Length: 467
Image (cartoon, rainbow, N blue to C red; front, side, top):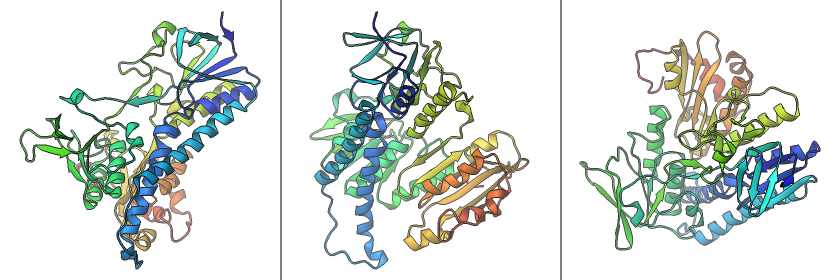
């Protein structure tokens, strides 16, 4: 017999703490378990530290181009990586301590530190202690995946976590992986002053996006001096003196890249290897993610999985939404499902990409009659005023229902402006409602009604390269 609780939450990522507090507030005796750092990926190795670093990198970038805005900066712009790293560490520490303090000060919650493993469907061992509860919530997150690359076992490399501890400037950073994590680090370190090369096995960057989005992002990175190598089918690495040689191509020159440091940004995997899911009877898919239904229930009654570990979303906001869904169903008498939410995310390069709903390619694949529009950011007053006109905004609409299916805003403040479209999609109202809205000038969002006014029928015979 173990210590009895009404509920056990494993992990303190974005979903776990909020759920534990809600459970405790309803009178449930709740235990929350954390094996390492309170706050999970977002606080310690994701959103908060990376966006803090991005802010420092942007400050350096703006200072270097100050003359374009009529501002004279005397002398060169230098980056103190020790100070940058220290600032990042301070922001992370305050966030982490805030999460821990919130949990420890909430009546009804027992905070337990250690590695949790299932012993049975409703028993969890943490060290020598055994805990049991009729309701258990898994929120253990994920970690960087290590790709199968020839020679990798013989060279030092960084991942998205260890990269955050770098307090010096790599002379040449090679990044394997041309998607969200890789590109954010690429631009960040280029702006800090490193030479940067991005190596991607696919034929374009961020393959899940439409081609015009990928091409525009490539143009932005090219403009900042970042080298991009696509179709890298002959990936291999080896030591060369104090540096690392990355083999990228079997035919085209240069076939190899000489770098000082190597960052792997090739995806993530769930933290289920040593969770004891087999002993509990909790079903996993082929990649190790916990299989859940639309209400985030696992194959075991009374056990739920939230956040990155369930494979139903890979972002902080999807994890928090998982908490909202479980809490609503369990505590508020509602009936919410994960399939009701609209996919939305951002790529936090500068300018950012805000994405919601379907891509143009996905919308075409549905066979619906479509309307679409695209407009360059150079039409946006805010972009011209800031001297940041890269990118574009585009939208795809169901011609029959007049409902917005998806949109992309790659441009200044695109990560904020895209919510205007997300909200109208969530409300399930036709696009003319938004088109007729009066927006504030000068903003980015004010051009969304103008974009919608330009909707035209999509020619199904044309490729999805920009409407």
